[in-house]
Amino acid sequence: MGVLEKNATLGALPWACEFAGRPASPMMRVAPGSPTACGAQCDFGTSAMDLLRGLFDRIILLAAFLLAGCVPAFITQYRQRLGGALDQVIKDLAPFREIAKQNHGGRIEKLIEHHQLSQDASFQAEGNAISAMLRSVDRMRAALEALDTNVFEQVLVLVRRGDLQIAKATWTAYQPAFSFSMEGMLFAGAVALAAWLMFMLGWFSIGGLTNWVRRVRA
Image (cartoon, rainbow, N blue to C red; front, side, top):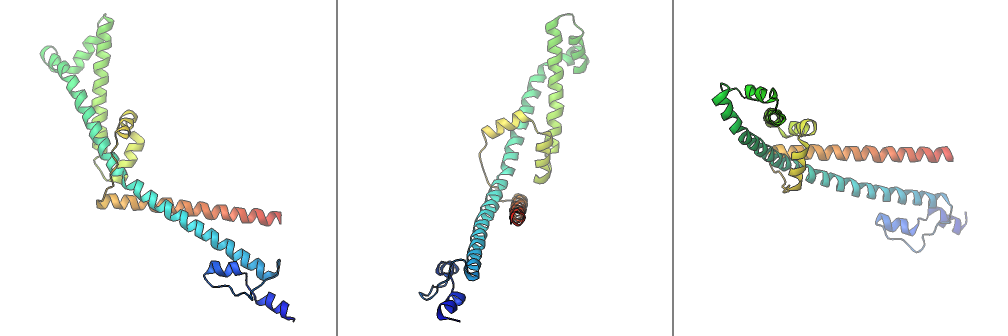
């Protein structure tokens, strides 16, 4: 084996050595297209993708943790706004309850029925409005009771049975705050872990699919 062939076989790409943290010797030379050069290029590409993946998964993990940690504060503000809406409806119903107490034995349902059986369209509309307010009171009370649980179930309740208008109003006036309670930290950690696992699954799935396509085309 000649000197040039020996240097080409045992050498390493200078840029590959520098990427690995080792100084490149001036004597290190690799002929283009040689197995050593191809191996070094593959190692460099793999290392670069590993660095990129490591950067992305840490960003996703941190972002998911911080965002999820603010969810309990949103739920608290949503509950406050929901409770305020309930108090307002109860206040609006108070005069009608007083009328029912004076004229219908305290039964507001009788007052509603009296309005709805009237031939006056305005009275009928008023009866329907009172009935709607009663249903709102029952719904809001049930929603508040359902939210009296841990943050994991609160999120499910909010997604399944949340009041869209109150949620929008809460978001508009939302004051971000990170929850440092044990429950809040556990929730943030669980969401961050789930987001990280989904990212890793997607990353390796796409990588595996890409490698399969390359092998098919080769």
